[in-house]
Amino acid sequence: MALDEAQREAFARSKEAAPGKARALIRAAGEATLATVADGQPYASLVTPATAGDLSILLWLSALSPHTRHLAAEPRCALLFTGEAAGPNPQTRPRVTVTGTAERLEGEGAAALKARWLARHPYATLYAELPDFSLWCIVPREAQFVGGFAMAHRLGASALLPDQDAAAAIAAAEAEIVGHVNADHADACDAIATGLLGGEGAGWRLIAVDVDGCDFAREDAVLRLAFERPVADADGVRRALILAARAGREAQPPS
Image (cartoon, rainbow, N blue to C red; front, top):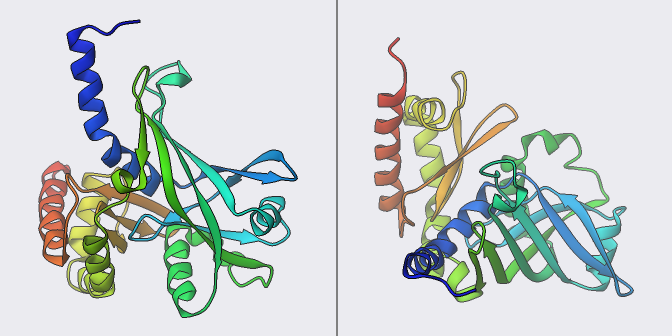
């Protein structure tokens, strides 16, 4: 079926926005479907991901689970992330399928990334130290983003992944940013969480920052703030948080 001019323009706009929307969907996801292969037979399971600053996907997996044994034998895999449908038709649901290769992480670097995964899934502290669990990382190689009906776009790694220099710069500054915001700007965290993100109560804390946004947590609840555009350094994070805090305060009802 041929597209008219308006449809072609809509498709072009969708294609231009696809990398950012795909990253936002991946970073905000509290769950995903993992597809593995065992002796040629596909297998799908529910997993709980988090992302590193460079968009590597982190999974905390039990060796007792079939998918973990599959990845050890055949590291090629895929992950499906889904958003909310615009109506009763599930096909309106935005979604992205990521393909890549899984690797088990160990050592000092793994400890820092495990802490990042736990910050995204605080309820998991109940089983975080069980000996059969380990941290796995999947680096995206390609993705298929579907933004709605007739809005499917294939994305290579160069299009999907954030600027790696910016990701590294923010990763290096992340601990200082998080510590400073939580120590000196707790009111800003509450304003962003309750005014912009639908959170309730006080005591929200910044737990992670990346080029695309940041995460706030209160007890077991985690909320994602997506920046209007990717940032390149710590100063970009600071400006984005100032704007978000201002908007959050303006959106809060009068006390």
